[in-house]
Length: 134
Image (cartoon, rainbow, N blue to C red; front, top):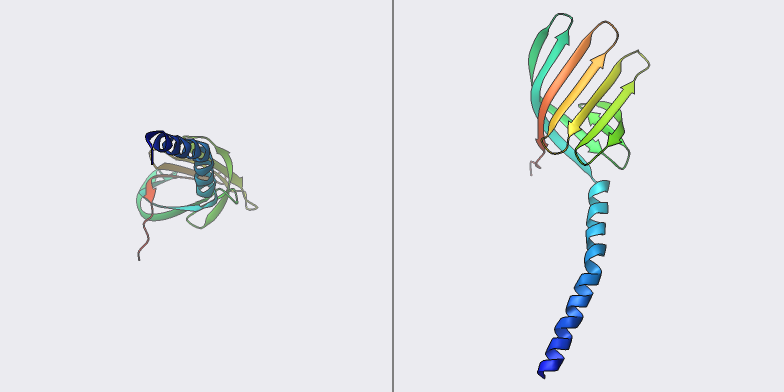
């Protein structure tokens, strides 16, 4: 193979890779947006008005961007906002409880406020991506 043929072949490979790179990246981003992200969290929960706090050792949060919901330890909350830095959620249920919260996508900090007009529960957590057990 001559030198000019090798140069042509390398040039062709570069053109193909350059053309396919945006497609591969967009497929990767689309695949990530469709998956459920499972977080394990620890932190504290504060009860107001009596100002009592307790440690929270094991809370699971499932972020399902495809369905547009957060499963916050069994409570399903609709996602109301998504940015590069955070996902926020909010809901008022049929019993009069309002839920408001957010998860910082960079630090893993999570916050949930639950209020029925008389009592407020404030949960602050530090979360990380769950690892499969097996």
